[in-house]
Length: 594
Image (tube, rainbow, N blue to C red; front, side):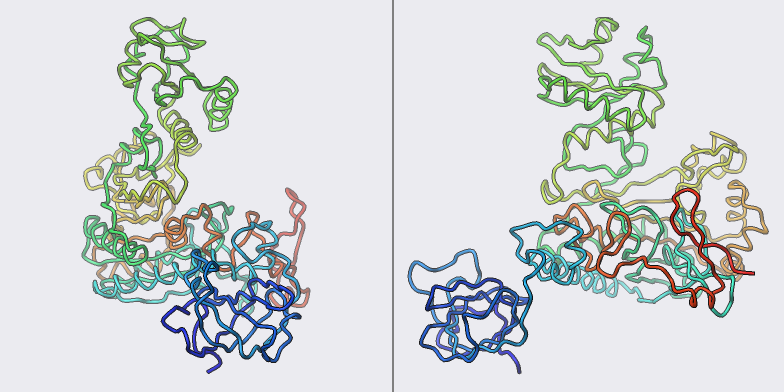
């Protein structure tokens, strides 16, 4: 074999043994006579010493960083005073007897070590070099270990891994599809799957019973820290199961995977209703690692004469010990609130005796000030922040500011998992009075709210709950699931409420609706983002750091140059032409050529 050992696995027990290692030169130190090389491979780094009187083959003085070497030598203890306690191999070194240059290397355009952070565009352009860093090596190994643990946990619970198609019909799932023009059917397109949702439901109709897939999914939506065009999700579905069944199994699977990867006991999974999460944390993906909970102060100001507090709700956020926050920082919080959609933000400092110092204090009665201090539990030296207006807006604004002020870094503060349940079936009402679904249109309404779904209208429909559930870890939504509609009657009612005409529903979802006619079992499922879970376990703020070849914030790939123009001959073969977008002036795809 080309090597007998990995560099990072050499230890004192091998002293006196002859070994062969292969790898890259991580660093080189030429002391005029003796040359020291740090050889790096996938397992770590070991120091190689080339003595001046040794005949090793390759000229050690001509070797440079990132050269690829094969080194044969004898393992020995490092001399006293030269042990490197920071390296697992730091107590030993290899005295080289033969050095072979397998490949020379130009100077690297980016630093390979983890001590220096290169420009992100350069890191992505030279991603194959970036992947040599210990950080990315560790992250990708963690990812692989997580995938193995997920497969083991699901397989042991009777789930069958099934692959679903990548070329499908376009179906609305809340984001834009990536489309693939068909050469054999000019003018028609496939869509790349946003998720395997419809196919996994068909698998339940087909009697698979318990399905899973580590699935590649694609959505044409703006990339951000926790989102890429293409991503990986753990997708699962269960027949003859309800929400409790799915949450129980998925909770066990996620816990087993976390324990397998980190060695830590899986955290207990808490449970909050959507309304409770919004009321206490201003978010349906609350970060439970820290306090700063929102407080409802609406009753305190029920009879107030201060016009700003005469809205539908007044929410407060107590920030302990921050009463001395400077005016420039307070002005920044006010501006932040406006960016989030609030007309403004009121701040108050709690003084000795419980009275409040604030520009608006003169507009508040003594009873209102005392009541606010009482309801928030504030003490002297605290800062109070208040937002007033529609309840959802006030919750959203203070929830975001809560994160700005208190959220720990991703890798700190432990792990807090939570199921969020009882989501609204609809998130808002559009200009035509139609409800907009909060999830996909195959989510089962809560059975207690079917009457309201049948006879409600307009804003009343916003009170209809769904049998949907999200799993949240440290403020990141890992994934979502729901009990699915499996009867034609309920599905038809949902389509009707959404304004989807029967002929449109048949055109989009006819294959699923037909399948339901032949004995669809009750079923429920879940999917979560593997990229997000790996990032959280690795302590990374951005999922790009746990994906081998990610895209930039703008969706570009500096490595390959994608997206790239298509040759005219290929466009003609597909029946396409390219026009300039009026909005951006950039190229956009038109319809088929006549």
